[in-house]
Length: 494
Image (tube, rainbow, N blue to C red; front, side):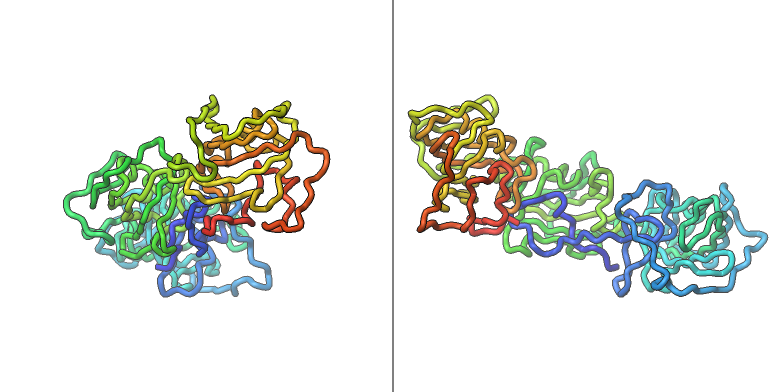
């Protein structure tokens, strides 16, 4: 099968250190009649399936992920085939779909709707018009049976792998009064020929797991996730209170195909613990330095109760993970970068920590509406300088109420001439999202700040020998300031 081959991390881990600039494969398989939750194609297929006519339009789909109807000039030519006559002795489902078996299968049987079928099919109208055919496209399809039209959900019950069946589906078990324009008219009865190739092909876990070898039996968690530790760690362990992990990781599908490798970017990756439920569960209790194999069933890969379209339908994922660090961007370093301190900090109720390097002697800002002029340098906890007015030789002017809360509070109580080091936790800075690409999610920031003036009346003169980026930052809002154009760290956080 050809399908999206990389776990879609980009939507869940914005501004993650080292996230590759390669596409992480957010490819949506679309239907001309409404987007299927996921779809796949044959490995040797060269054209993506243009429609999935068996999707039940009453199933809630993402409204913004639909394929526009083709224009008249690009419509596929109409193909008309002989209309198969329904025999009098054709079997009937409870709801009135009729069927005959053209070939008996010998494999696993369809029993219930909570399965993923890999099939070839051809669908036509009663006048012989073939409106869709995976056979003609040369691309088999895998789809969740519980999201197909009722005639399919009932009509495929009892089929065995290798079997072929013909269905006569009345309009009320297909697309009903609305039809599926422009191909399927209102109140259209449908005829399908179906070949069942496999059931739950991407969910079956092999006896020998791909990736790292291990000894012993896997432990099954209440969620259905299976784990086994390959090497024990000796550092802190992951808990529900943590937000991010730094890992070396590889991921595989059940057929052994590699779909993710953090080593492809030449370094470890920082990933959110809430990437998806099974990932969160599988990480719990893993110690820094430890290595763990994780088997995450398809339902535990859902995000916001929706499947990841970058995975084959019903796919179980097998991970090999080495834990390098926990919440790497929120730990207080020792020693602190920047100005050196000689005393303990003062912690405020908000969580801000303040070191007074030099007491000022002038007035303090009157409140959030006060405009101040400061010099500053901002560090990440690893010492990276992400912004510095000192480096630009140009102080910054801003209104206290228009910057990050840690600055509003920390600078708001300074006196002119004072110098402070501020340790700003993520919730008082850029929070869960960070400020891509320079500031990671959940990042604590360390600022060295000097208060120069309050309510300055004249712009600061541009020095003739100014070194820096050539931009005037004096009027910028440094709270939501986009640092994306100034990566001072020398390393790519994108």
